[in-house]
Image 1 (cartoon, one colour):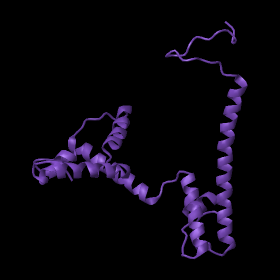
Image 2 (cartoon, helix red, strand yellow):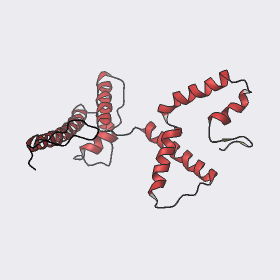
Image 3 (cartoon, rainbow, N blue to C red):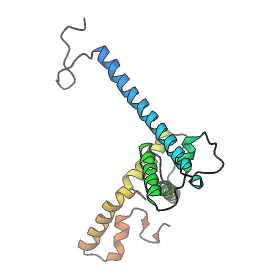
Image 4 (tube, rainbow, N blue to C red):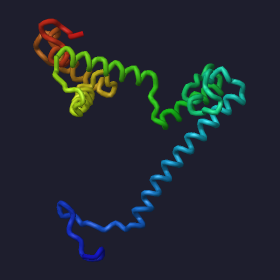
Length: 193
């Protein structure tokens, strides 16, 4: 069978097509070039930021003990001080670049740490048997944190609305509502923590 012959239909009856090899290579090159250009831009932005800070004499912003040629760590560990227009602009640029590089801020790291500690505490209290080295443990933990949203700020509003709706419209005493809403509250002893 040759490439130009009629092609079997795709799964579900849709029309299948043959991908032109040159188009496939060009698409891969485009995505690789885009990634390279993004990395080059981020590197140039960090170098320019550090050099501008040094040129303006704000060396107290830069961390001590870091090599002057290590622009990445100098940029990431720098602490912008002051509230003048230059400081505000440099803080803004630093925040934009950090978001572009997907670095986590101190608040996000702290919330992840608290969520991790809470899930470990709950797993210990429920005495759930897990097998070390079993990949299902990691899946269980990911599912646990995403489904229940412990200290997950994106779930906070939804869980708060859910709890307030139950408290508002349920006819039972409000003091018993937390054990229905929060899975880690024991009805006999109160909160597990």
